[in-house]
Length: 143
Image (tube, rainbow, N blue to C red; front, side, top):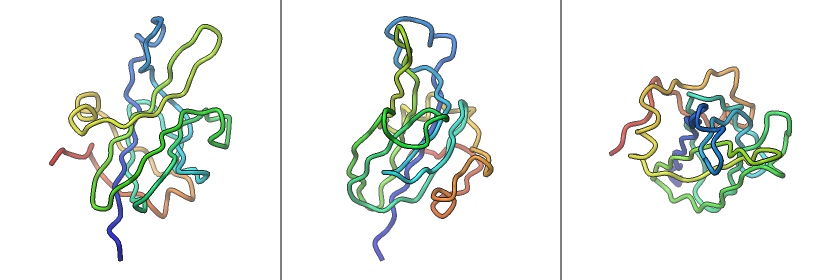
């Protein structure tokens, strides 16, 4: 059996700075998906880790009102077996609307903004994510 890949998603952007023009890291609240499967409804100040299969994936972050990855933020990533990935989700304010962002971060970058982050409650994990979730009590530590 091929070892899984651990992927930690988090939402830790700044609410106060999110009103500033050109600020790309506002707090995200919405759906996170792997391809078309919805993993969870992520909320600010929370994180969640999943075991995913190695290989090419398109991860997305989208509004809680839109049950598909279309129009959301997308990250095409090649997940390598045995590694741990850290994926930040953000809301970038624009003049008329907002743009959903999702990007890979280093473990150190992820640790900086998530010292007080809490694990996402199970009620926010969707069926597709329940089979893949890693139960944790604190944000993962860097190797």
